[in-house]
Image (cartoon, each protein chain N blue to C red):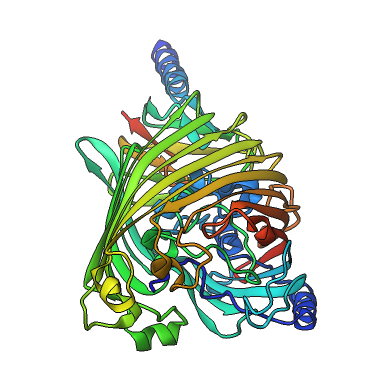
Length: 462
Length: 107
């Protein structure tokens, strides 16, 4: 009954012919293409005079290195103070094109695309990404969905940041207004900015995911405060309020369910570097508690979700002084969700209580900030509940999904010797292999996905 | 005549003394950090900043009143100098890398 699957908003279809035309237009237009998360932001590079590799692992987003995390903590406001065309705001255009092949054919799974072997212009994104005032900056993203059509808002975060002192140590503190839990986070272990960074809009992914793992993505407005103390301890508290259906229609967000009240989100993390910044370690916890009217039906009250998650990050940079140094970057997260489904059990006959657990671990080894092989193991496990996960239409009632992702990316620019710092591109080849898919291992490999994606980004404030 | 010689000698000594006092101290910028990150100098001394990173930095000298003196961009391997004439405590920052800062105390 209650489908909280992430990334459902853009999972629609397009014909092969339309995709080919879109691909050609996207590349010819000099735009870039971007799967799911807008991340490579040349307007940040133009604002700071730094190459993409200064902030990002592999010279392309969204994986952040230390300076990238700091840049976000300080509210996207750092600048090299150079006079540029001041009348041009820090705007970036990103496009994402893809070729997608699945082992099996799934006609009708996603509208506007063929049953297999689809070329698609997945997204065109316009971002305001950079400083507004000396202590106020923004990352606000509007996306055109090239597969399903239509436009809507994407990950957005406006923040005010200042420095101060607490207990005799330096702090950076700030206020954030954003539209998804974890969009404000500076680590790539949490859902919004987590691996895989590229995915295809031409396929349908697993059905079950937790509330914090994209379940209310872009359907809420949140505000909160954060603080990094002594470059060691990070604390953030936000509150999220569900947007009304009219507002969600206007911003292109999912309108299946409705959130009740204000949902608290918390984040606590500890970080430390060792060996002259060659090694970086972070461990943390985050979570949310939310109440949802399933299907927007208020007659039977709400379902209650409590997500408690833990995460860890590790980075090894053998030559930290060198911006194009190799980087090993690894992330892990575990999310446990307790679902009290009183409303759905009455309305749709689900269990009264379910549990859903997600575990993911991934690693990237970036070579000279140019070639980046990546691998991920992912697993979702949970209660047997056909109504909850599949609306009663599942092959089984189990939400279990397990698999691996393998990816190799090539980023030609974004380095100090690149011809420009206001444009970048990345081409990636990705293979997703399922050992279980939506509770079944029998035909799980039919859902295996081979994806070639081209992602380009272009800043206007050059 | 003796008086002139003595006066001239004092003048030369004073000049030499003042020249000796105005020193130049070196600070490296390494891995987005100033090294050292605290420095005590005498009024009139100069601090020379050498960018040993492979990305562009900036030197912004902020006095005790919070007034900035932006010395501009600093390409890799470039040096920027800052002369500190007035006693007080100064903060030197890179506008690009917000965590990159040092304190210069001028006596």
